[in-house]
Length: 325
Picture 1 (cartoon, rainbow, N blue to C red):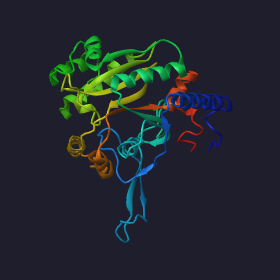
Picture 2: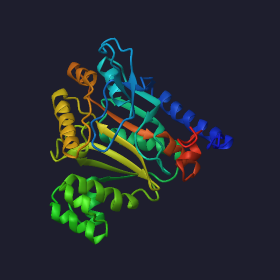
Picture 3: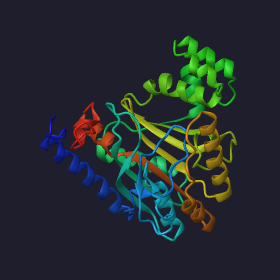
Picture 4: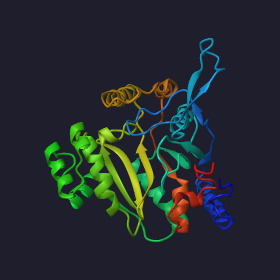
């Protein structure tokens, strides 16, 4: 057993400097820092995202002799949107987030996330602000901006919004990425996500941060549908030097549509033999009360520090990796 930290004292000081830069960035823009719970009674329904859960015996409405299942947040999103619905202005948070997934060079089940929300911003306004923050922390070349549709056409010569299942299978075969389980799922959106992750992502943001925006609606359950093309939602991601760094939305504010999208997620979970997740009723109630038009984004602080220090393994920017926690 190794009790020592995976983060050196020298890198700990540099990490602290990055956090100071981030907080100063928002202080100058009068965006207020908040803190929300790590535990929640509801969780995400995303088919490809799983929360870590625990049992709690003392909730006021728990049945006698029965524990209530609580979930460690995969991001502070739902709680922060509840703050916005209650009347808060523009806010940010630097918090721990937790995901039940394998650890690796870019992943640890416990990590630090920066999330912020800007009232009145659309996705392009927020992408510009993210690019400004990256310039402050990382310097270097200015960012590129490319639509999801264009990056597919440029990289694999297929329109993702028009492609058939068979056309996508041909792409997988061409790049020697096909697998029986992928074909058996018979899911166009799953193939799109696999092609994007396995074939396109390695080509994005090599020498400068690159934003990809307007993802298919099925891949953006928390984002507004585009007014220009109903097939896509106003979601964006940013990649730099092989790292997925940012995920953002022009936020969906319609409670009924949000409920439907959560239920669709759970239907996909059930179809794949995965457990159905409890929909966060407090979040839906907040949307029903009224969420102001806003855009929000999540940025991985650990990955940002990796880029700032040119470090290739996330364990070297966290005090203790999961193996030493």
